[in-house]
Amino acid sequence: MPVRRITQTPAFFAISLGFLLLFQSALPGSGGAAWAQICDPNGSPPRFGCQWSLDLCDWVCPICDPYGTAPRPSCTWSSSLCNWVCNGYTGTEVTVSTTKGPTHDATVTLRMSALCTATGAGESCGGSFPVFSGMSASQKCQAIADAIANDCSSVGYVVSMNDCLGESTLVASNLSCPDTAFALGLSNDAGVFDETANGPMPDGETDRISGTLESCTPKPGTVGNLRTVEIPGGTDVRLTWDDTTDATDYVVFSDTSPNGVFSTVVGTASSGVTGFTLGTLSGNEYFLVAGRNSSCGIGPKH
Image (tube, rainbow, N blue to C red; front, side, top):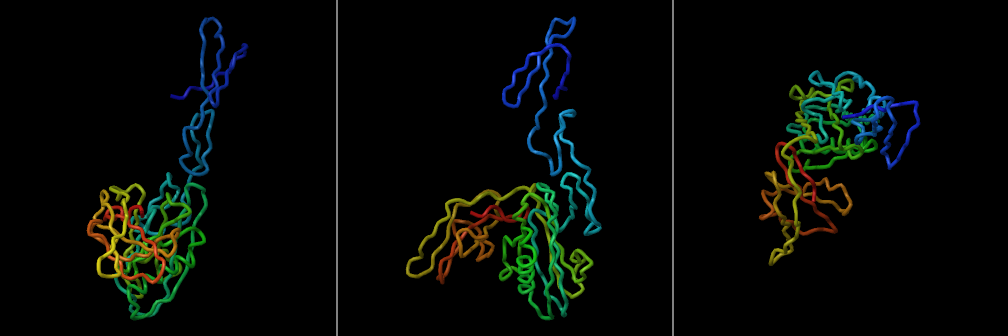
């Protein structure tokens, strides 16, 4: 329990050890001693802009009022995150699955928005791209991935999983502020943040957007002992690994650099025992594996 600082006029004796200061003084008529400890910050600030108060012995944070209008009517303002929280497309990771391509030509606007709780900096971006009648769901998914790379990478957003070719699905993340939830919206109207909540967009396409928060449970654990096994009589190799906790299946990622993002999905597997078979490689290629479940999505890549 915090103890307030005591100031007295009689002479006193002080000892300073690191951040701990103890004061002793004779209380008139008491014959005893009184001790008080100066309050030091108890850990990190709860969010940006907070200052430690010696008088209150607590963090004092500025009032966090909503900025702008809610991106969607169902959004609520979080005073702890100092940001909008929108069920459906807000998360520390946001998954976009295109389930139907456009039925006529149009322009799609992409918006991404966050207020980083670590720095207080706004991280908003936007871009647009054309779509056309007969465009496949995979092509539309890749167009979204390209827009994120071209228009939003400068503020920290990346595509951390690209399975547009296989499942018409991608996952977006914020590398510059990974602990803060962000919103991702798609629209045919530059004045609307998101039009995917009510079914098909005006151009006829359908996208399903879902966010995953850092607090989700259960999170897939980290896979271990990733290894390659040569398949006799051929040039193929099989990746195998030790299964992890809370994973319903596994996603295999590739990159041409050992220090890359590893966003490209080359396949999935039900377990590390059966593993995943790789065909003949055209050059240097590196692989990571992550567990996945429906509650928290993809776990750590390893």
